[in-house]
Image (cartoon, rainbow, N blue to C red; front, top):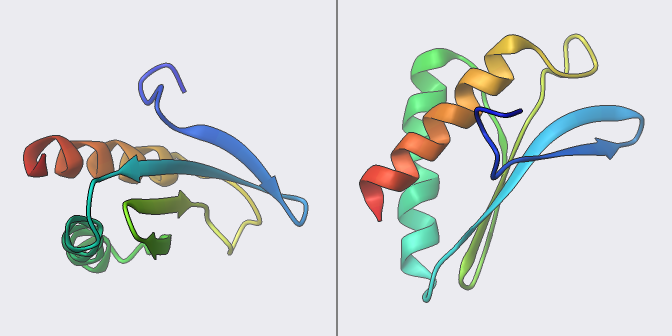
Length: 88
């Protein structure tokens, strides 16, 4: 968690996941970042929960197969941060 300080640990239906809200000033930018994250997640074979709203993109990483968090979730959260930093 120290390496991804903008992410928070969330408990949802007894399962732990990492979640971050990316804030924007329009609707198009969250869509564009969501597509970038989708491309990387497809390449990695590991897919997040993505919620798009006006001005906000919420990304949640967890590994459903084990019912919680795996090291890969932290890696993908870090990759999501990198995409956001390159994008903004």
